[in-house]
Length: 422
Image 1 (cartoon, one colour):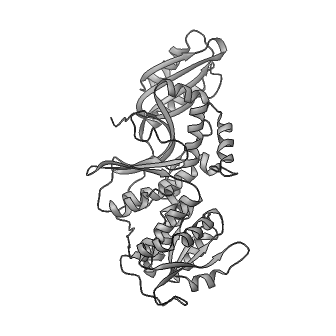
Image 2 (spheres, rainbow, N blue to C red; image 1 turned 30 degrees about the horizontal axis):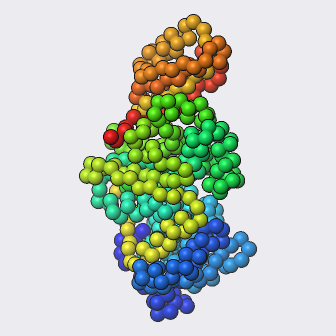
Image 3 (cartoon, rainbow, N blue to C red; image 1 turned 180 degrees about the vertical axis):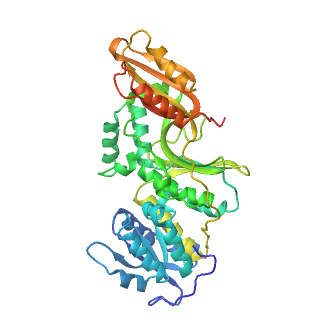
């Protein structure tokens, strides 16, 4: 991003600064929705941006020429996804002196530093609001409204697909597979949902948010992430008994002078602001000493929602807004943090079982908040809530428990966020 006014280029075909020409890379769902917004809301866009807009050309797999579209355009909107050839296309546009707006989270998460530098050198803008939470203006709030605020933590629900699946499982008792099929039927999940349900999509978004919030380089490889594929209906049933709800969370926070960035399923108490966020919605919380906390929520997926965020970036560029995304410091990445845990064990109900588990936990200096047992004989289940402890210590205890001879399946652990904000 540039800290100076972009040069006034006499782009071929532009009519005396009255109309801004937009090149669009990608003709999918979002591209179609973006074109519809341009046509439908032309007067409102001109009023907000000070100039009208029109599409100068569209590049798809079967039509269009990148160089011609770049030459005719003032702003390039990249909607093709992935990193190849998107990285090359965006770099070529930036180096040609064109502003770029993208909805491509993997592109920014994996190649952000290179792209930001290219934008600075060319004196143009690179904007990516739609890459994070759809129509929720998280990037703009962190990068602009809170630019001078010392943020301590950014966390939230940044993947609408997984939030819908978990909401469906909790509300209907459906299995993971059943809830996923329903999400695909409604268009909330892709045919191949691996990045969403495995946590990679949320991890890319958190890498971007962490960089913006803490002004420190964050690579996608710095983000530890887990998905929701192992969640079972009885996990959610027990959670309901305990007054908890399950969400896939992304968390970026300062820890002991370093930076921890993670994605994981977690149980939240009813009083937590993210607990009532259901369905395909996103919600992000920002915490700082100066503001305590603010929460932003809204639809996080879908063609019209993403296109709206893209259009917002286009209008910001044309209105002359120019935020700066510069690295101010380099924080150490912290991988071992503390958390409370829900622990689910399927065991044979025989004398001494609980004592042996308690012995493993005690030797690892882990204390238990509560224990619930269901079933008898070979169908017994133990559900424990573990007090907050270092994750490395809990992991060592879990590895020991997994080797006990009375276990009937692999232990399953889910973090518990103990904050209630009441």
